[in-house]
Image 1 (cartoon, helix red, strand yellow):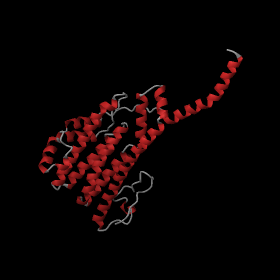
Image 2 (spheres, one colour):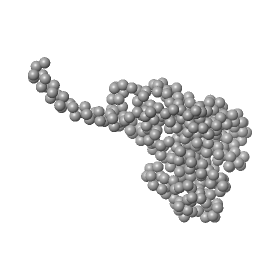
Image 3 (cartoon, rainbow, N blue to C red):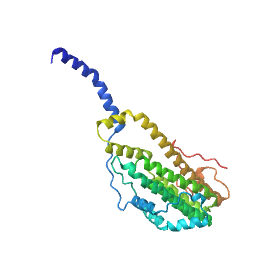
Image 4 (cartoon, one colour):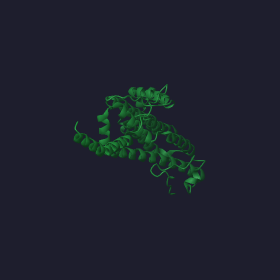
Length: 301
């Protein structure tokens, strides 16, 4: 190597070094440390959900068009599946994620079964509603919300999206049922929802789990560079998913407030002046807005 060539290499290294450092810094910011693999609970309630979903009859999707007899027949046919799912809800739950490139494709059938299971719970609730058993259908809809939370715990982004959709079904039906509930049912449902909401996984946990799965599944320098190059587009996709997550969380918190407000009004004969009037007899604490982190806003009727 000539002196001239060596000097050129030294200059080139000096010029390139800041860019190498910058790329290394950006990769470290995007990627971060890998999370340790969490052990699965034993027994794992998620296994019960999947098995119960496989047991559910396939005609659950048209429940809005079912008459009373059809609702009763479907509920009876799915009684064993619902009992198994409730066993799962009583245990710790975690999605058994596999670090495989075919995992998501193979996992789609499980997610479809979870949706069927949620619909089976709704059918049970619709039957109780039609037979004027509001306390029982409220519990069915609470189980749907609970299923949405637990069936996504520890999973990747698609698990959370499906879990959020399941939770949305439960909160929507429970919101419609609200005018039929008495004060005691409202108080009990409020307390259950507060507990479920406090135990849900956070959005940061969802993203960490998604990134952890992606990095353990797609390894190598070219994948790290691809992640770096697509960071902006991925960030936008995650932001949209986060918005859905927060919107549903807001709806659940609003339902908590509506239930507590109804219980107060049935007991007192008038609505509360502020949310502070509901604490601690009707609410453990004033729900926090997921977007602002401040108290939810309440407007008396």
